[in-house]
Image 1: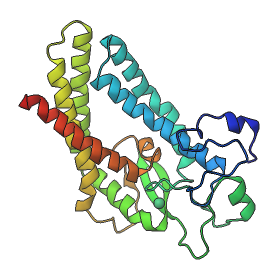
Image 2 (image 1 turned 90 degrees about the vertical axis):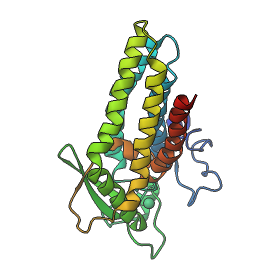
Image 3 (image 1 turned 90 degrees about the horizontal axis):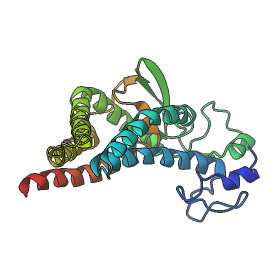
Image 4 (image 1 turned 30 degrees about the vertical axis):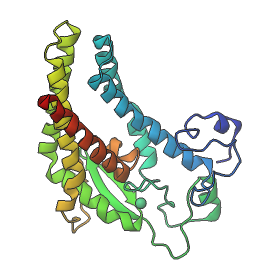
Length: 267
Ligand SMILES: [Zn+2]
């Protein structure tokens, strides 16, 4: 794929992923291998699609006035996100390491120089271990994820943990979400009494749930076989930033939200 003038105007590579140069210029110093813009666009689009999630959480947790508008916009973004994020996952699943988010060499084994250069793909260093497949499944459909050789084990551990703890984690996320949505709907109708406590409980329970999701993989081993691991959550969310970054966001925001939730009851 040749760079075109439209590439230079594309907002996805600019800012969000740190690539601000005009089309055809080298990537900024510090980017390993000097990735062509195609790779940055893929990464920048993933960041943009991820930003829907904190935006929705901001609308629900901070619920700027009018609350009915925050609630409606948050629900609209939450429901609409999948229609953008699923096609993104379809593009990214074969190109990125699901753990570290690095753009990988093609899966076919026929890594030719023109293909690697034209598609904006990092050519692996000579002697580097080739990427490995990681079979996942969501809604009964297979997902052929890929990982750097060193990252298949932590990714497999995480998805195994998510599968094993799926039911309590789902309850721990969807129950407080329903509670907060109900409190927001009541507040939009003029009954605001329960909203501060519901918001604090939401932050506490979601903080606990995402902390459990992010730290729990330390409790399990990688699965022995290569059978597909069922993913009990919308799988596209794991392909936006990669699982490793997502889990650090879960750990940091989770700890902050546990503190925020508890401090409401202390006061
Ligand atoms: Zn990786």
